[in-house]
Length: 309
Ligand SMILES: O=C(O)c1[nH]c(=O)[nH]c(=O)c1I
Picture 1 (spheres, rainbow, N blue to C red):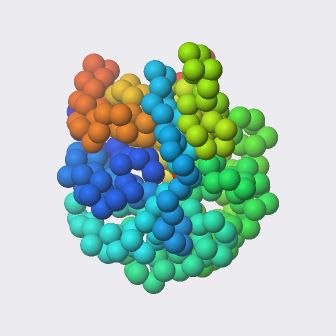
Picture 2 (cartoon, rainbow, N blue to C red):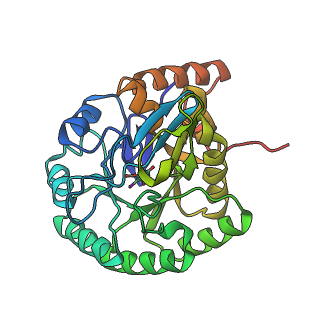
């Protein structure tokens, strides 16, 4: 079976990439993703200036996934624009994730990205749950609409958004109605971590990460059904847009499920953090095996074809 696909008319060897924030803060990590068999890669969400992020421990791997409250540690947007300027786009597409601390910061970064005239894809992160005192725009529909109105106008080129998980059909409907207003909003990445979970260690009777009294974003097995729901909800509601699936991917079957739900590309976070970039070889092998067993030779034969009962 062939895993070749395309994204916004760009060909990719396969639909797999990292999730923003994982294995992508420093150039050496990004280089490792370029060298890996990932079909594409995305940079750590960036802010105007470099940030240390929250106090450690701020990430914990768990039997069923992960919890994190990194606090947006990153090298500052110039660092990632420099990386994007040196990337070989013939090899694989590069996405730049932007998560400015204010609308103005986002507009400054987006303007710089536009001025750089790079073939990189902008993934506007509206869903960071871990910056104390910064509510995420993804859960404030008025703020989200304003951010998109200004960014869509300033950037003028195709871009995408990274959304938080929603858990109610009214929220799916409202968010989709906003996103559908912006013609150059070309893709939607669902989901970011499930925000502000609390993991407790029974023996120590304590939280397991330091920031925010232990409250942090959940990833891994915990989030797969929610991720699939959000992928399919926006796939159904935004027919003119491309969906990128993110959340809970650990096996080729999980990739298959995201594709079935309507995803075009599939991002890997927690499992990549734990296994490293070789995971992209394993996931492709497992996906090919599953496709062969089902008699599929190309992804387009089943992508978006989720059956209902
Ligand atoms: O804490 C983080 O840096 C972080 N952590 C997440 O789970 N999602 C995000 O978008 C971000 I910006």
